[in-house]
Structures are given as C-alpha cells and as structure tokens.
Length: 383
Image 1 (cartoon, rainbow, N blue to C red):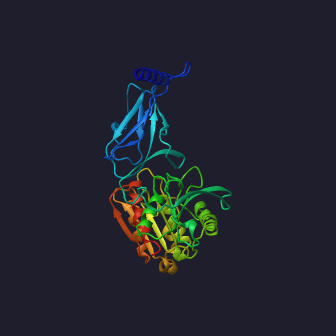
Image 2: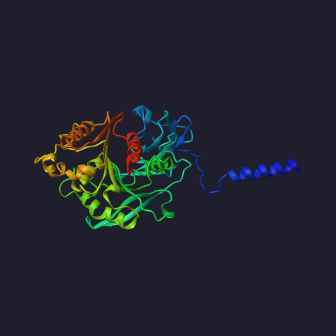
Image 3: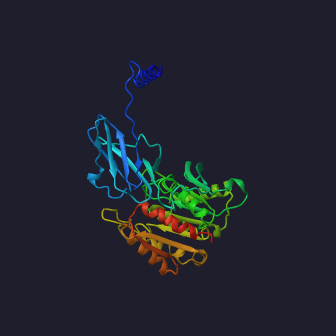
C-alpha cells in the first residue's frame, strides 16, 4: 500500500513538473546578484539568444575589460564572478549585445542623472550596513518650485523617533554630484543607514537630512553663475518648504550644507551668497570647479571674464561669514582628478582668513570615498 502511494505521488510530482500542453517550459531559475561570504559577487542573467554579455560595474574594484566578460552555460545563463570587494553598495548593469539593461532578477535600483542602475549592497561595514538599530525613514517628496515653474523632487531623511515626538531637529542639506540624482545619496550613498548607525552609537546628533535634485535641466552640470537656477530653487523653494513642513530649527547654528563633486561646488555657491544661513559646510571631492583653469584634459576652459575670486570678493571678505562658520570641511582623495582644485580652493579661502579643515585621503572620485566622508562629517555637526 505504501509503495502504491509513493508511486502515485511520484507520478503526480512528475506531471506537476511538466508544463501544460501548449505552454512553453519554465525558464531555469536565476539568482543574481549572489554575494558570497568572502564578499566576491556573482552576477547572472538569462539571455539564451545573446551573442555577447558584459558586466558594467560602476565603482566595482578590479573590473578590467576581461573581468567584465560573462560566459554562457548550457541553460542560456550568462555568469561572471568578481573578486572580493570592500563593503559598501555597488551599481551595475548588463550590456546584452550592445543594449544596456538592469538586472531583471534584482528589484533594488539606484537612479543617476538620466540613468537607472541595479544596486547590490555588500555587508561588512559598521558605518553603512543595515544593522539592528532604530531606523529613520527616507521619504520621496514632490514640491513645486516657484523659481523654476515646475514640480521637483527631493529625498528627506527623518531620524528614528521623529514621528513620536514634538521635538525640533537641526537640518543638514546633502547635495549629489554631476552624474547623479536626488535618489543617489539614499541608495548607493547609504545615507539613511549611515545616519541610523551614527545616531544609534551616539556619534552624531539626530538630524533631518534633505537630499535635493541638483540638476535643473537634462543637460546636467554647469558651473554656477550669478543666476544659477539650483541656488535660486534651493533658497526660494527648498529651504522654505523644509522649514514649513518639518520640525526643524531655522537659525544658522542648526543648519549644515555639504555636497560631493558638483554638489560641493554648489555648496560653495550657496554658502558664499548666503553668508548668514549656515554654520557648517562640507565639500567632498570638489572645490571651485573651473575657477583655476581646466579640471582635467579635455574639459572646457572657464568662460572669459572676471575670476571667481574677483566676482566673490565681498563674500570672501565678509567677517560675518567667517565668524559664524563653525566648521568648513574639505575631503578629497589623492587620486581624484579634482584634487588640485580642492587644494587651490582651500588655499584661496585661507588667504581671506577662513579656517578650512582639509582631509586628503586615499581614493579617487568614487562612492567608495564619499560614503566615508559622510561618516566623518556628520558626527561633527551641531555639537
């Protein structure tokens, strides 16, 4: 009797495994990405008809041309394993016969400027892992920009416990770089998790972090000028929206601003044109971009006319700006193409009596560096 039931069960299982008549067979299961215990990562994609598939890897270390090539097995699954990487978060896409696609097996994505990437977190960092601590929330906010005449988007982090109290909080405006979007700091930048961990360890004060969209047009970055659209949107719309909608202090001592690359340049533009608004400023892998000539070979020459120093002499000589600036922090990697710009910017501000803190570290122009800078800068705020 038992053997009869076992035989019947085997037949039933076999029938269930067969696709119904007229229905194509189910594709083989694909797991991607797969992060191994040693922090190597295997990427896979099912593309049985493809002739060539490659991995595009953002900040993934050691990704040479050969290391990008994926190989296909008998089931039509393309695969590649990259060597162990440092903990963090990594953007990637696949190039399938010349077409760039995100990983269809990975629902986690990160937007950049005009692009979407798949995203893989790699654990192993006390600073940026999703740890067992109280967590804040990151909200995607749509607001109307009167300066630009259209709806805009920004991301806002509120710390753990924000909804359970009537307390006010200091506010930190965190700006992204030229190839990124408002969504970047909270995804590949791990800003929410970094703040959660720092606050839980009592290394940073609970604060609200505002991550606005730095691009005001599809063309991307341009050096800010007298009528810089982002600066107008920031002062006329973003700050008033935050101060009306969230429980934040509105005095200078409880406001901070920082940004990476393009966002660092924007930080300096906002800071010098609004000398009474910020007590803390951070410039990550940046400086006065274009103020000292070309930033790298092939970059356009700065437009003719008065230098940045000449145009902003009143701000540079403004005693109130210097007096109320509690922290003026710069960080740049030694291999960053903007390292000379950073050095010259720091020296220019020193020339006018500012006291910038300059931290030159290992690394280049990558998120591997910028997440660490956020971890160094945030604990210095509002102390």
